[in-house]
Amino acid sequence: MSQKGYIVAEVKVHDAEAFDRYRALSTAAVEQYGGRFIVRGGAAEILEGPWSAPQRLIVVEFDTVEQSKRFYYSDEYQKARKVRENAGEMNMLVATGVDSLV
Image (cartoon, rainbow, N blue to C red):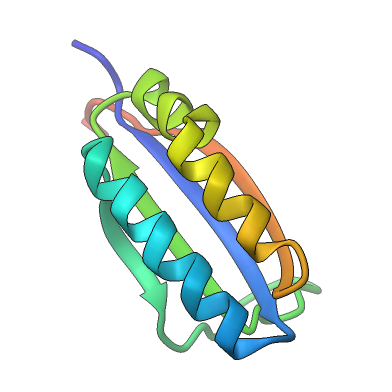
């Protein structure tokens, strides 16, 4: 059984209008590649450690790590990234889920 893949991103928006264009394109790409938003924007509260709370936090679940990478490297998402270039700053990673905690 393949493990789920999670794209995790922290975002700082500088240009809300440009970021809205990015969001529309990236949402379409996420849906096209079978992703599901788990966290999208909402409040983030630091519980421990010297983190800086992100302005926006995004977590997208994919059926596999490979599928999450297909999304990221897709022409559709790369087009969205181009639109986002001056809209803000983003850190993004892919994490592997666990099959079971038991």
